[in-house]
Length: 362
Image 1 (cartoon, rainbow, N blue to C red):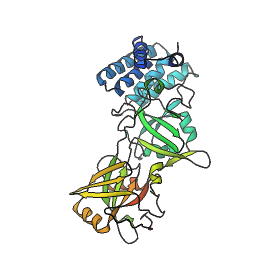
Image 2: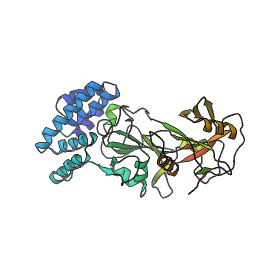
Image 3: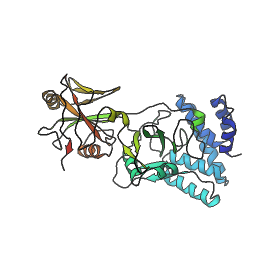
């Protein structure tokens, strides 16, 4: 019996998901063993998860070498998860030669040379169909492979899966362990995918947000507000996730997060707002707050004095800010990201609005 058919039969009457997954994995189903590893990792049973990963790989390899096309697909998934996309694609081609109709509805996409963010990504056909031309490259450039958004463990060097969750005010695209925690898909709720396949996430439950933020303070003449050059607080609020918005043509494009726009954050060359946030400086530590979010970064003495003299700073929220040490290249990437938005946040009770425009000098 094929794995997908078994899931369809069992899901309706499933009471104990973990027990069923374990039983099916122990019966020698590599795809289930892979999913059970994700179930265990989510519950922080890392040792047991690694054991079932080994079991899944061993079983898939043996069956794939015997010519089982289901096992070939599972093995290709595991190889991609391990960071070997070339071998993964080789097994997918062998599957296509053997059984053309039994093919995964996702593929491995590689970034263009010289681009930041993700270098490889597993993307579903439904996602590629919904994204406007060129947007997948922007999405990959705005995602950084730190932590899986299901189990919370490191994504490592493997090829992550892109899962897009569509909601009434837009969509979010997030990264997961491929196969173990999620398969690539475009879904409009946490239980029923739009893809024709039944994702294993139905068995292991909805994910919890595990986003990693990064922030960096900077001061550069590249950015001006009228006749002054403010201190910037660059923030990537979730390096493993980007927001999407549907355009009038029905296709989806990268966009700022809805709640940041609701707070008055604006894109480049739009009138700059004083947003409902605050900046505080304690010694050489800068903390920015807006709504329920809070970020912090080290600053220099000169930046500290400048923030106090100017009465605030320019908060820039962008997916283009890479984790790690800031540099001129990192700054340029952060400011040029298609979803970058900015707002002025005061360091004191000064609530005077600003009508200047933030702009980047060539």
